[in-house]
Image (cartoon, rainbow, N blue to C red):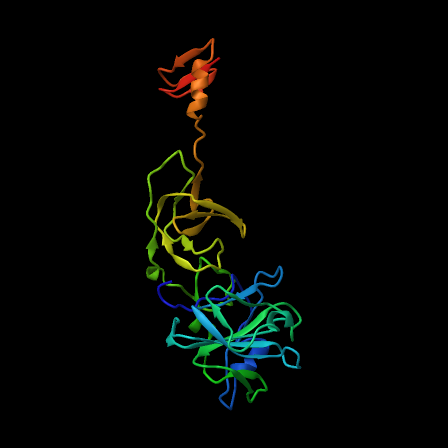
Length: 310
C-alpha cells in the first residue's frame, strides 16, 4: 500500500455484538463520568480460532494484562507512525481482549508488529465462546479505567467507533456479517498497478490475469503485503505454491492467487525434442504424411502438421 491505511484485522468479519448492544452498552450509553469506548465482538468464521492481524504498517505493544492474574487477557497496541483512517489521519490505538494465555505469554511491552503479522487469536479467556473483543481510537493508549456504568474502558486516547477507524480491504476480509454498520472500502485508486505483460508463448507455463483488482503479494499468502494490483495480461510463471486453498503462482517478483474468473493458467505445450524427431525420421520403414487441410484421418491433424509413422 502506498498509504498507511488502517484495515480490518480479521479475514472473516462476523460481528456478534456491536458497541450499542448487550453488555457493550455500558461502555458508551448513559455514561456520566465521560469514560467511554466502543467495543465490538467478532467471532470470525466460527470453525476455530481466527487470527487477528496487524492492521497497519507498524504497531508497538504498550501494555499486556491478564496472563497469570485475575484480569481478562488484554493487549494494547499503538501505531508507531500516522495512520490513514476513514475519519482522520494520526496515531491509532488498538486493544484486543479474550485471547488465551498461550497467545500472550511470550509477548511483551515494546514488541513490534508489522502489517499482516498475527498478533493473537480469538480466545475464551473471560468468555464462554471463542471471539475477540476489540476497541480502537485516536492517540496513545496503555491502560483502562472503570466508568460510571461499571464497564472497564481503554484510556487515554480518544475513543472512536470501529467503522470510523477501519477500512475494509475486500481482497483480504470477507464480510460475513458487518453488524449493520457502515464500513468503507479501502480506496482502490491509491493502489499502484504493477506488472509488465508478455506475449503468449506455448513453450512456457503462463498465466493470464483477467481482472483489474488482483493483489500482487510479497509472499504466497493473503496476509502478505501487497505491492499493488496486477495489470491485466499474460505473464510467465516462475514458481508454484499450493497454500490457503489457492494455487499461487510467482510472476516477476511477486505472487498472485489463481482462481476461475480471476486468472487462466496455461501449461506449456509438450513438444518432442529434436533428437526424438530425428530418430523418427530415420526409422525404416517410414511414412511421412503432410496434412493439406484440417480433418479426421483416424488421427485429427491440423493443417501444416506432420505425422511420423514407423
